[in-house]
Amino acid sequence: MAGLFSASAWNKVWIYRGTFLMGLRNTVISAGFGLLLSLCIGMILGLFATSGIKPLAAIARVYVELIQNTPLLLQMCFLYYALAFSGHGLGILVTGVLSLGIYHGAYVAEVVRAGIEAVPKGQFEAAFSQGFGYLGRMTYIILPQSIKVILPPMVNQVVNIFKNTSCLYIVGGADLISITYSFVTGENTGGAYAPAYLVSGLLFFIVCCPLSSLASMWEISLKKREDRSGRMDRKRSERVA
Image (cartoon, rainbow, N blue to C red):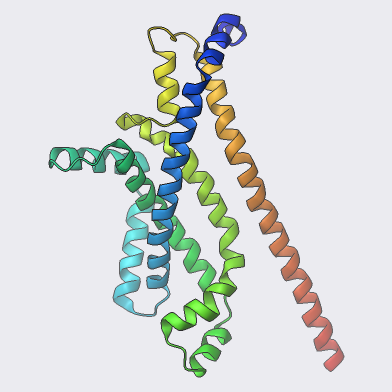
């Protein structure tokens, strides 16, 4: 704990503050591209799972179970070394983005599936009776109604992706955790362990805490809206009766 109160250690962190900001920037970039990939994968698999076509639903189920029940760290190492030994190495950043997208795509798929299934079946039937095809039903009728259910857990996935960029450390990435480790073991900057990791954790907190709070507020707002809607429906039913 002595290092935590060391003025020289804190001075090192301040002098090299740009290093931590660079790590934060790389983390945000990795998380951002990983999120885009996970949204693409998750949307496709979510639609597969609710399509009513058994082969497509089976593909979505196998993917989700396989990815969710194996660690991200294992998947990242496998992808990195498999590509490297096959002679098709894509670089650490690209490998990290692919790993994050593939892993979180399984969770996004479940979020999309749950959001679609939360829409009353009567909406599907009404859209079908109006002559909408499957894509038309999803695009114009179902997905717009499922957004309110999808958004809160989707924000949580953004937080999880951001935190899971720390796994890039194992393959030598340039994320915030990797940069911090390089800093505390560097020849000129070594020794400032406590201040460096405290600053790194604070940067993660500054990004993740507001997003987590936003997701919680959305969920509370959704519940209140549903409660108000339920009370109004009951009152209308009582007046009709």
